[in-house]
Length: 377
Image 1 (cartoon, rainbow, N blue to C red):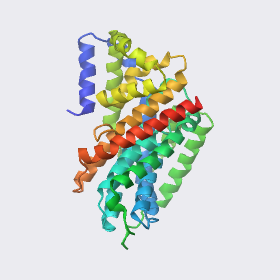
Image 2 (cartoon, one colour):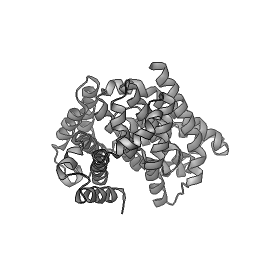
Image 3 (cartoon, rainbow, N blue to C red):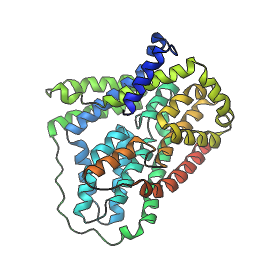
Image 4 (cartoon, helix red, strand yellow):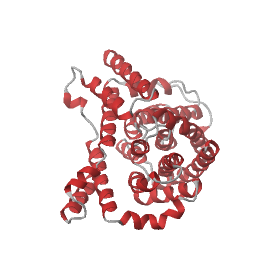
């Protein structure tokens, strides 16, 4: 069983034993979150079919003249694209290309693979659409896309710099000299489709920035993109497993609330949650590594909503739950995707190799995140 089937079986079992009624289970599913995730997946599918991600990554990585610059470009591309278009699919799409290019330069892929995974998480901090837990927080908090980005983009930007510096320091021997001449794969794109998709995506972000509901804007963009001559099976090649996982988790957390378990849990956690930014960050970080970041956010959602300064608490929760995912290789879906894709290409991204970088990056980025949020509070 994978995470989606576990969540679905558990949610059905909770209905069958009477822990939550069928009507309450259906009401507990946040349709706005499901719609936003699905709409952004439609956008990603179109960008992939148009060759956008391969085109951008290939163009950007051609600018490298030294290994350190190549790493900076890999981290920058992974972080920026993840902030705009959800981090998990970005890792899936750019990891094979980076491995291919790094091999052509005769370099060891390991530090670049670590850079992709960590940067995808760090970059995704910046926006509501950067990762699944931010999508949930955006829906629950009511914070606008622009306000969210204004508050957390500096955390993402500094975090990407920290990621680059830590990898350079810990893999110092890998970053000497210049890159050897290599024949790089040509960037491929399908211009008519790409032009149409980019026009709609630009309009989408304009709608985000002027304050149109994130769900409404994303669904409108997805609808416009689906008017195409391409086969529907291609256009709807979404991550149905992730959507099913979310639906199951919503029902499970609904049952926890109905049974009164959430009050028991937060009777223990409340002093830490209400103890200020640092205390909330540490609580979120620990909980995210115990149960994963998306369930942690769902569990903490009711408590955060009633805090006196809920906006600040939501931003802290978004920052901490995302950055905590970099602590270990198992901490987030993005890093696991990088490891799985690398294994399929006969490259190894091991737990201990990742941990060596993940621990200092997590501690440093979360420390800066707390300082920044306290400064703008």
